[in-house]
Length: 291
Length: 293
Image 1 (tube, rainbow over the protein chains, first blue to last red):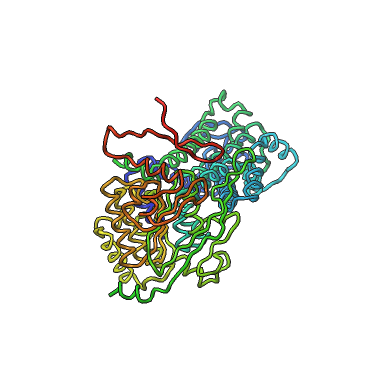
Image 2: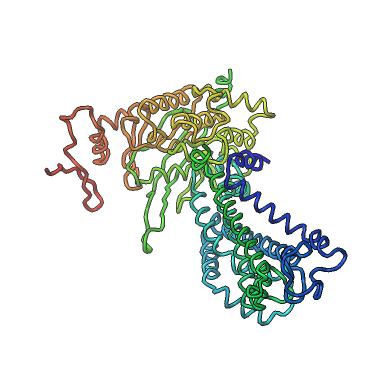
């Protein structure tokens, strides 16, 4: 498709976007290879099982990041947690972006009473205080799956992106090129997909990146205060466990530092992609930044 | 050859506004009447340029949008070939869409910044089945570009921001040329162009009217361009058409105070001949009063 080829053309020479994408790619590859890494550490055994090694071992060739309070290999825990965090981020982020986009486009392109209704709903969701709700919810839900967590996080996080996208669609749909497309007998679906969406890509990508960050950090926040859904072991749970068990004072700093470095790297990569995409898709910025 | 064909196959077409009123919601529940019981007709059997002259906010652009089917009027009827535009059959709608084409004011905004400018041509070719295959389509595009004196190599494959305002507006005319509509609705097409490009544009517009028999509604606030293109003119004031006639008649014997003011407002290249009057509204009736100094 043309938009994809255009994307490839614009990637060249865009340092921020390239660095962001490469960094994200590396993180995702590490996460995706968690099975291989865990096997390599365990050598037939499960390195995340209690009593795999001795307690509180310092980093060594056998345990690159040491072991935790029950002898589990921290490296194995980190890559497994990373993958869980990434999955929740991707799932929750994608879900919330999709909800946001659909609501925004329906509201803004159709207009009228539907817009009023959807815009009010969006504003309602925007003012719902998410954290107390999530805390209350996790008090009830004992065993919830990764998918359920993503859905819950998505339901409370789509509104912000939706509002931004809606206001942009409202402005874009009155552009002459939309009128011209109508006069050229283009269907509404095609106008939305090929005239509006390409121009919205930076905002959609921005919304997606923010939603992924929000989802990951919402769960990390819950885990950190010890209210995360049980059964889900993400990077936040690891940080919580290191704080709970005083890993830092026992010299087991990797258990604390490794998840934080990874979370920071995810944040950094997604934000670079954000800024880079804006440069890539905004033809006026491109002229300046392209040099 | 192509010209002879279009003229020969041209049947008399009519697009008609019948008692059109357009009301927009204003601030705090007030209503803004943009167009107030306007009726007029454009016919293609005697191709002419009809100018619609009025100030900003007088409802000119709304009339253009209504004619183009982009805006549904609050009341009144738009008829194409005697049928309401809202109740045309599928094939009639296609004909109407192709037969009434715009030239917009802002020649930059008509191009989606995401795509190359070629796209506006290909979309028209595809949706109105103007040509089959890439080569035939390309031929058509090049032919139309040459008709507006653009070199295909200089404009095709570029983005709108890489072209000049004159080039962009002529691309729009090339699109009109390609579609060969009976009616062209040109909404302030030259207000964003400089004087030389403006004349060039108007010449092409006149050429289209004479060569291809396109009836043009030329919407403007600038009487000097109206005098240049000739034909008929209508003056619109506060959503109402207050004066109608040939350009010659109206220019020499304007009957409405507002038209008089417009004619007086055309600047003359003489520093000693500054404007000495201004328009004043009293109970909705415009009056010309001297400027106090």
